[in-house]
Length: 222
Length: 248
Image 1 (cartoon, rainbow over the protein chains, first blue to last red):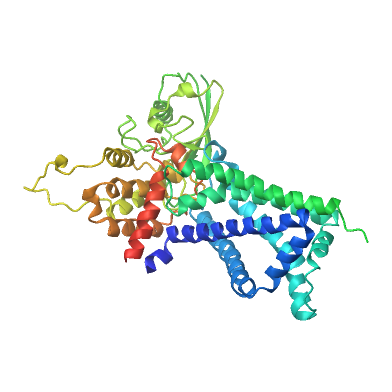
Image 2 (image 1 turned 135 degrees about the vertical axis):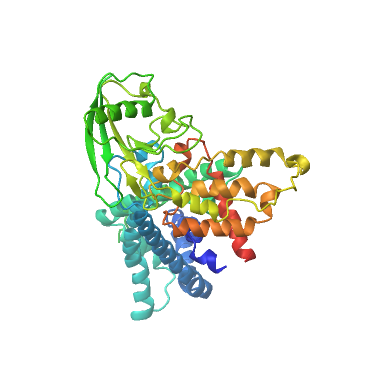
């Protein structure tokens, strides 16, 4: 078991498992967010539940943060090792002849998504922690919809979110199906997994984009 | 044809190399790529210059000795062939061709275009065999029935000639395709299952020790492999490794 922890294959498996966990989380996140467009009341109920349920707050939320950190740190470690594996570069290297741009540049799309997560945490998580634990405000199950819509009022933030979702789409395009290969799954189901990956990588970010633009174009008027 | 060549020249392992320009006139399409280099070398020798060192042996595409990075791709622009099977008809009059050695920290340059690929030998020695005493105990191979599908997959994995194109093509200089082919050719057969647990652990450990990069599933190795070794082998090695590690 100790050899597994130290090996290159194990590092890839950690990357794959943390990635798949984050992919699953995205599906939950987009589903709840979509209710903000369909039914503000439902969005408020879900958000309140996620904000105050013990299981979500003390088990799921730390797990999510650990998942993000593990995926990020392992990504950096792997990238560093990969750079060290070829210290003298080719004068001419036709990477595009045999591999897609997306698969060759996961570190770039990943770092953009990470930078976006910084903004996203500042926008919502830090705000939430301040509301609950620093200002010690009372529970208000009706506040979430207005707070969310208000965030998308500035054009710059909406544009940043849309661009980041574009990069997230590219990251998922390669990463999702790649996780199965890293876990040792390459069989008759692989073509279906690759097809599903492409649908997922387009649809999920596209729904996030739609929600951001929708709230930007439909501000709450008092 | 007139061909412009940009070739990596490096005196020895400790020297710093550089790209040197050469011009070849009268290159014919039916020449093999290595014949073209032979003619260039004859010309250099006649001028009293040091010829360009490059690896070659069978010149039939089966030994895996040639190891040229041609215009940014291992073994050149054509698929499923080694550099010795590449012909000058794949290029046009006036083309510029950049020729470099396979680049990886684990494949240090010995001279010019020759690299040391003993890292592959050491991975193979770590477990790429089955321990069978064949002296006086020869057993007919067909005594053990093997599923056709497994026999075919094992045979396809065994087609790896260990040329190193997978490492050269990979942006991370990963040796996962080579190692997985060597693991797979035994893992799929009952004779290889006896030592399967130790084999995959030892070979992966050696691969990591050699300083190859990590696989990021770009698929470049599969595309550039002259023998068409499939990425399925990497997934199989990952499964084998996980299972072996859990068993202890």
